Length: 320
Image (cartoon, rainbow, N blue to C red; front, side, top):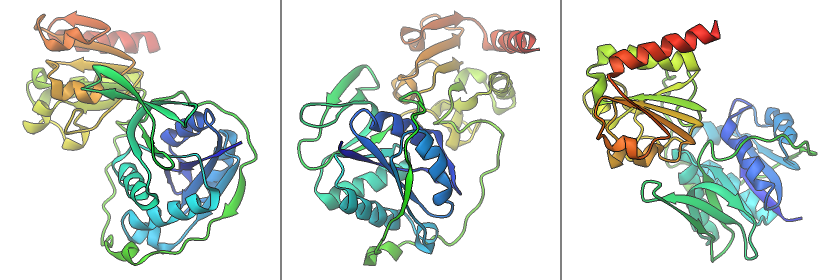
């Protein structure tokens, strides 16, 4: 059976959820071969095998940590040359999309970004994408070369499928460009204890209606009661009420959780572009004509300062 390369997103051997989703999708079109790079790469093998990887290609070198992106592209190209896959799947993060684009240029292939589904086709893998702020879905396939496809987090349910997961060392030769951009310092992100925004199963976002940074605790309290990530609209971020790293929208992050709760967000197209593929959408807004209500599965016309605390209280009461 044909093999599919899956780029592994991990932190010191801890595999992140989007990679496990990729393995699930990869099994639809071939046998997954995982590529794990950097410190802790070999430690990923057990969980990758549990989720369907027939092989795990690993490589570790200082270049992966000390320089940006290009060493990883060199390694993924080496894996591509060794395996000759029918497709290459990469998580659709900012770094993932850059890696995928650079690889596609190198191997002379087409690229599809931000796929939300994948299926086998007669002429190669067919990817589903959301277009025009998720108002439409499209099905596409690459017409030249081996398809390189980035997949949005939460696009597939993680499914266990034990496989061999044989670990093999990947020989990598770094090119002249690999050391072109050096990492000179790192500052750890302050942990909130909440899930990563783009990977969270539940996201609670606040917008202009929150009416100030001092009121965002209402959004945080609801999120914490649900074990959710916290998002914010562009209006809230531009006003300085919440960090830009939490912005959901066309110029922020795209999310596709199982549940998205929008409180005090009108639903401008800029925001909808970043969350419209959410599986279930709930909105709280006192303006019954707000565009967000055209999109939602459940809508509450009411003052978020009354509705959100009641909702948080009810959730906590049911939990305890």
